[in-house]
Image (tube, rainbow, N blue to C red):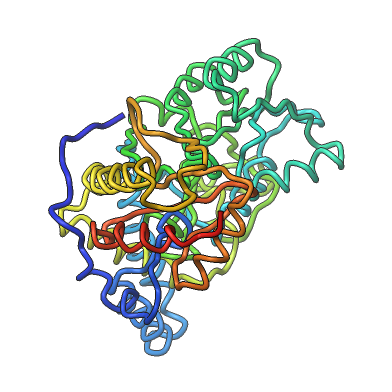
Length: 395
């Protein structure tokens, strides 16, 4: 893991002028749909113009320039040894189903996970279970000793696939010891898959020591500020060389396979599907290059968000944010990395969300948990405005 004593010098609202110009809105959900920076509009237009001007040859640029630039951004952010281990897809669901298809084990596949995984895994895993394709063991994600319990169960053995989030999407808890699972992983099993969607560009992450043994899945929709269509998977070499679920893009490049059989690329493109909308990758590259050019490292942005979280928590504790003082904070600040959102549990969370929406304040709710996400387009004035809006919430 990487740590930097660095903070953004003030909010960077200038980078989000178009999104922030939407009238009557206070966006406090940067963890959900992160606002898009201005540079992504130019990228979206560039994608359209390339399609119009280059026509069939747009793929020469999309796959020959934009795609490798996106891979390189991911590799630099995660300290991967090579960008060739990164493959992109329209969403993480496509990547997860392709990954499972590459696991050549007798069914049902024995899976260790938690009960707090995001819906892209939760729903599919439930259906796989119904169909007899997997046999899951689920650890309580709310357990105070989650890390120890999960690691102890994993070390008992008997699993083909181990799946866990780096940052849990509902509670904001950080599974800082998830990387210890790499010690158990191998090409013959078990495979370790880390859902990094709430960690990528939110929590400084260095995979250099474990990149040869774990899968890591994330994307552009949240803290990468790029929106849809730019999910990615880091696939360690030698793991899953021949996914059963495969598209024709996976047969480009240096292929290997049985004589007369279906060939696959040797790098992460073995997990590729077929034709896709490349505009998400244009936006992903534009946003990533903007962050690098502006010196907005993940550590710096996280420090800025943490400082604002402290302001908000102090206001809540002082009773300045109305009934939010009655909520249980599921991810209070502590040692180590922090999620980029606060998770507040209360039976009236949904009612509070609706009441805030009527005031033009955007937050979101997962079951009975109100989530408030902060980013580099927030400042102290936004915290004050949010606190004032919460002061009038129904008890």
